[in-house]
Length: 243
Ligand SMILES: [Zn+2]
Image (cartoon, rainbow, N blue to C red; front, side, top):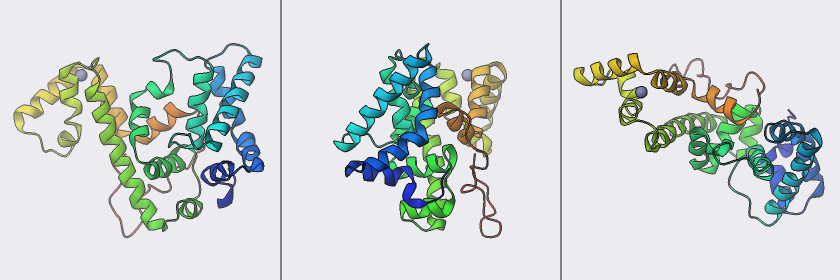
């Protein structure tokens, strides 16, 4: 990962929009390997995967130049376009996953802070320059982004018709249960259901490790040490982030 703020994806994309060819070359060199791995999940031969990546990259560049790109971190946008160009079947795209749908519903600044904290971690000082924010603000923004993502994911899950009502009932009450705020009858119902439902056990666990789950579903294994922004500050903020 390069450590100059002017080379951050976000700023390179802005340069591509202005017709800067060098910026698109840097983005290509930085992301073509990941895009190729991604394409390999959907097409069989290496040559085909390379072709798919080249097509996807060209499409992304022209959409950015035409100001028609979606509000998404660049790599997520590129990988979604790779899946599209590879002809991924409905239900097999990353964008079909409920957590990714929830992520894409977040405002651009929340997506950016989460992405460059968790998935492609940038040093805090660089991210502050890129987003034009104080580092302290950035930490607060990152925490807000996590709780919004969590709430959106719960909403996506509950709205999913394939999730049984009894499971949706539980998912809506995970926070209240963990805070000891459920009434006695609800608490008993919660525990009874959890005891007999593997799906809910997995979901509760995933909600407790939200950022790890996000990273694991959107990209191949990423660099270590990505939680720096979300780690509690030693003295002033003794509370930990919820995930
Ligand atoms: Zn359940």
